Length: 89
Image (spheres, rainbow, N blue to C red):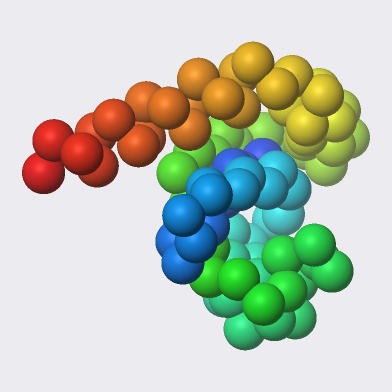
């Protein structure tokens, strides 16, 4: 089974907040976050997927999610690249 580590960004606030998670069903998980049924931190906000990476097993995905959550510079770089692309259009 495939697992995904993903990065979400808020769409309805001036201050763009990011969230990292892992799942085996990316579409369903994002819908849960946007419906207020995801992680407690994500409730009450609208989210957009800006990055994901696929892994072959849950153990690897969980390790990478942990590393990604702790690597704020990588998260900031992905967020900045995404926001800069949005300003062009």
